[in-house]
Image (cartoon, rainbow, N blue to C red; front, top):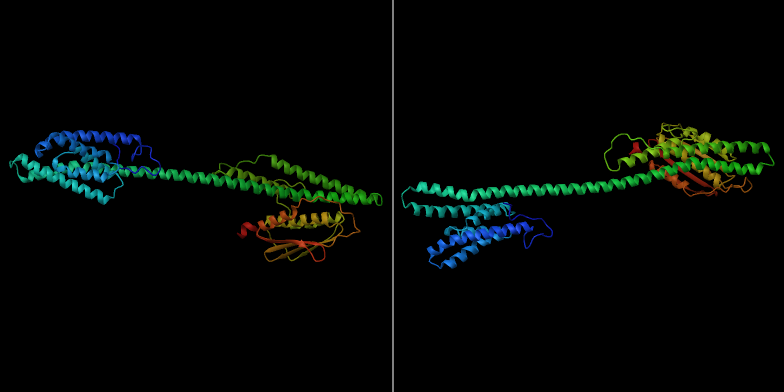
Length: 445
C-alpha cells in the first residue's frame, strides 16, 4: 500500500484529476470499488435493522464505501465519513485506509490526533454497545470494556502508526532528493565559474606573455634599427664608427634572436604536472601560470634560463650604456640608499625604464634623456624624461609603434599596487613616472 494524500510536488501532474501518477488513480479506484462492495454487503444487514428497502440500504452503503476514491483529495472528509457510519458497523476498509491516509499526508498533526481520538472513541462505544448486547449480561463489564478497548486500538493505532512512518519516510526521501538536486545545481554553477576563471586566467597569461615578449624583443630591435640608421649616416664619413655600429647591430641581433628562440621554446614545451589538483580550472590555470613564469624567467636578458630571476635595478647602468652606445644622450641619476625589494618590483622598474628608453629611440631622436631612480622609505620611484627632439641630429629611424608600450607599463605598475603617470612636459618632451611599493602587491595585500 502506498502512502495516500501525499504531496506530489509542484508542477504539472502526470495523472488525471488530483492524482500525481496514473498508478495512484488505478489504486484509489480499486480501493474504492472494494470498499463499496464491502459496504454494500454490510448494508443488507443495516437495511434490515433500519427497516428500509434492501436496495436503498445497499446503494447508500456502496456510496459511502466509494468515498475512499477521494482519499488523496479530501482525506479528512473520508475519515469523518468513516466515523459517521461507525454506529452502523460498516466501512471497515474505509476506516483503516482513511486513518492511514490522514497520518501519511501533510495534514497538521493536531488534526490527525483529533480524528484518531474521535475514531477511537466511536469504535470503543460501538464495540461496547454491541458486545454487551451479544453477551447479554453473561460476563462482567470489565471484560466488555477490555474487549472494546482492544478492538478500538487494533482498528485505529496500526494504520495511524504506519501512516506516520510512511509520511516521514516520504518526506526524508524528498528532502534527500532536493538536497541532491541542489548539490547538482551548485556543482554545475561551480563548473561554470571554474571555466570562467580558467578562461580569465588564460587571457591574463596571454596578455602577460605578450607584454614580456614586447619588452624584451622590442627594445633590442629598436636599438638595432637606431644603429642601422646611424651606420647609414656615417658609413662614408667615418668608416671606423660605421664598423663599430655594424658590430653592435650584429651583437644585438644575435641577443634578440636568442631571447626570442628561448621564449618560443618555453611556449612549445609542455608544462610538467605537479600532481592531481582538484577543481575544474586547476590544470589550465596552472599551465598558464607556468608558461608565464617561464617566459618571465627567459626575459631577464642575455641567455637567462628557466628558474633564474628577472632583471634588477642594478642592471640599469648597463641598459643606459646600451642606449649611449646607440648615440642617445642619456644620464642616470640615482638617489637614496637602495633597499631590499621584491623581485617582481625590481623587474617592473627595469621594464618601465627599458620601455621608456625604447620610446625615446622611436620618437625623440637626438633628444637629451634623464633617467632618475629614487629609493625612499619602503618604495622605489623611477622616471624617464626626454627633451624636445633635435632637428639637426641623427635622422629619426622611423620605428613602427604598436601603441602597447605605455599600456604594458601601466599594467605592470598597477598590478603591483603602484602609481603610474605618463604625459608630455611643458618643454615639449615626454615624461614617464612610476612609484612601486618595495614589498610587491602580494605582500602588501
